[in-house]
Length: 143
Picture 1: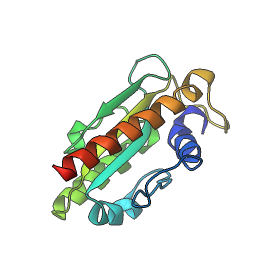
Picture 2: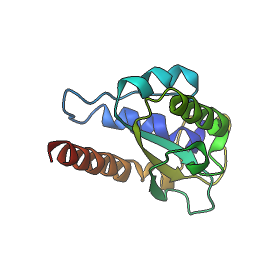
Picture 3: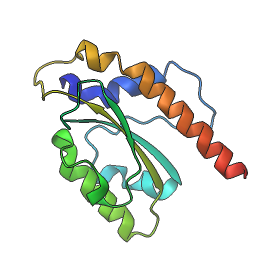
Picture 4: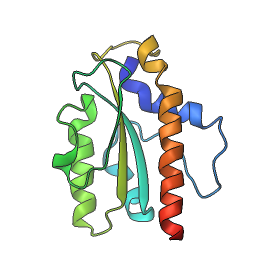
């Protein structure tokens, strides 16, 4: 809801863009264990989520977490779900490389389906960050 839905809005935007056929876009919703199969299937995962980290709304950060403790301490309402997902994937010995793109939000806004202007304006920059990560991943796989 509101700015907390930045991930969904980014996926919708990226669905209108061109990606190589081996790239899969997925709206993971609120995270959770139903996403565990993707941690087993893919070597590289890019996640996009809102965070209330005290930065100005729309601030974009890239984190490469390896453990649940590497996730930002305040990840909106999915905090426990993502951390549990990461811990479970680590136990399965099929832990992919994760790039977590966070977009700072000011507050949880229940009952809104739109984004604030500052967060909405971050979507093209999130897309560009995803493209750069994909290019870097492809370069690393070729070398």
